[in-house]
Image (tube, rainbow, N blue to C red; front, side, top):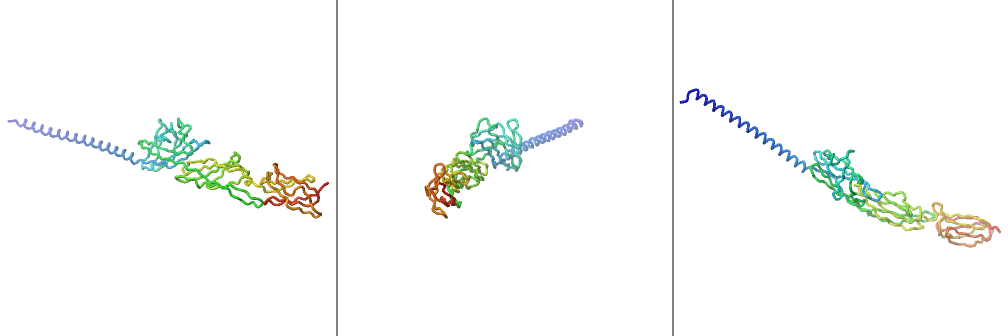
Length: 348
């Protein structure tokens, strides 16, 4: 039989063992709880990351391209809207056929492999700027009339892209007659309504060349070109849409015509019995190849006698008539031009 002391020691051992088992169980449970909590946290973070990747939404809302004299893309400004509820970072921007720049500029800062991640705040927009000649190792080869594909890669490796199509430029021209009273003249009416775009055309710019010399531009969907010479002329139209994309037509020719800048005034110079009659245009310049007809004479003392009563101007734009006898007034007419009255007196 165990002694009382032995029985007490056994009882203590059982109690201690039970307590140790409880401690181990509690410790294990606590460790498991911590591990489960960490796993739950990791899973929440994973799900949050997945949701962030899935819900990230950037939209390329507009561009402002700048073209060089030859129509090649020189600069490009891209507006990006963040439609997400959290901030996003743009790591790369590409244009055309996946052509990436060495760097890009945004908010006055330069972004590249070393300084990556242009942040666009939630529900806000930012603008990314590219200088084609400086930012790219090779020319992406995008011209004024080309469609422009742009894509963004974010810190979540999402890719967002948009393609902006260039407008289609086309126009009609027709000749319109205008009555000046003393003469009729022709105008050139330009109509760019045939131009189209997938959005909206915002600007029509007309380039008119007079014998190869570029005149001040005309603007508007329709325009009236009032010539200041007889031509010929060449006309080209450039249209710009609501995204800043442009398209340009080929030149259309307008043949030379005296009706663009017609004769409007008569002038006469007397040298003895010789009378030189010229027809001048709106700038008081002599117009050549204009028919001048002498229609009637007025003389209070008797009849006048002339070497010719109708004639056409010579290559220098003049008509020479000789007064053979008499004294009076010659009435000179040419088409609708106001008649000219020339007092004359024969000198033997």
